[in-house]
Image (cartoon, rainbow, N blue to C red; front, top):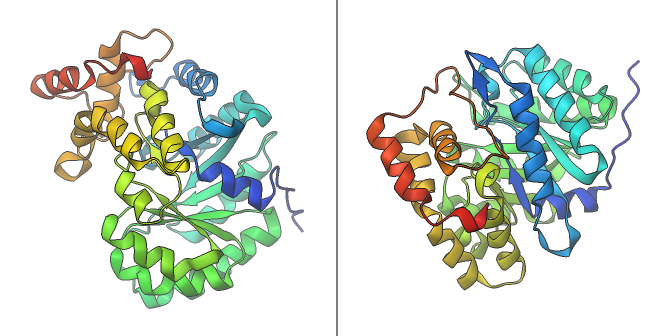
Length: 318
C-alpha cells in the first residue's frame, strides 16, 4: 500500500499562495529537446524577482504554456524534479497533469509525489475527446479520493468548457481533494463559478494577466505566461488587486495588453511563441526562451515586429 506524502503546506497556506500569481514559464527547447539549463535560469529569475506583497511565496507551474502536452513522461518528471529542487521551500509548485486517461494521471501523481521535493498541488488539465458532463462527477470524485488518500494530493481543476459548470458545485462540495478551480473559459463564467463553489474552493483566473475585471467579479489570483520575462508586472497587478486598487491593476494591465493580445489571438496560436519571441528580443541575459518547441515554431517576421512593439517600454517590469 502506498503511503500518502505529507503536504508541505496547510490548505490555508496553499490557498493564500494561490491567491497570488501562478507563473507558467515556457519550457525552452533547442534542436527539438528541452534545454534544462535554460529552464533553470528562468526559474532562478522568477524566484529572485518575487515582488508579491506580504511575503507571499512565488507559485510556479509547468502546464499548458510550457507545453506538457508534447513532453514525454520522463521529460515531465525530470523537469518537475529539477524545478522543485531549485525552488526548495521558498516557493509553491503546481504540477500540470493530463487526465486522459485518468489511470495514467494517477500513476504520474504517484511518481511525482515520490520526488525529493514533491509538488504542492496538481493542476488537472482539460479532458480531451468526447464526454458527457454528467459523467464527470463520478469519475473525478473517485479519482480525487484515490490520489488524495494514496498520495496526499491536492487538486486544482482546469475549467475549459462552460457546459461543465453544473457539475462544479457538487464536485467541490463533496471532493476533499479539489481545492481550486482555474477559469479557462471567460469572464462570464466567473460569478457563476464563485457562486457554485462557494467556500469549498478558490476560483482562480486562468487566462493571463488580463485579469482586472475577473478580480472585480470574484476571482482570486491569476496565472501568467509572461511572468517569465516581466514578473514585476504580474506581481504589481496582483498586489493592486489584493489591496482593492483595481484602477492600479488596470493601469499595469493596460501596459502589457499588447503582448497579451498577441498570445491569445487566433485561438491562442502564439500563446507560447510570442513569449519566446519577447524573451529573445528583450535583451535580458538572465532568462532564456530557447528556439521554439514542438508544434510551436518561431513566430513569422510580421508577428515578431508586433512583439517588438508590444514590449517597448516594458523593461521596467522585468
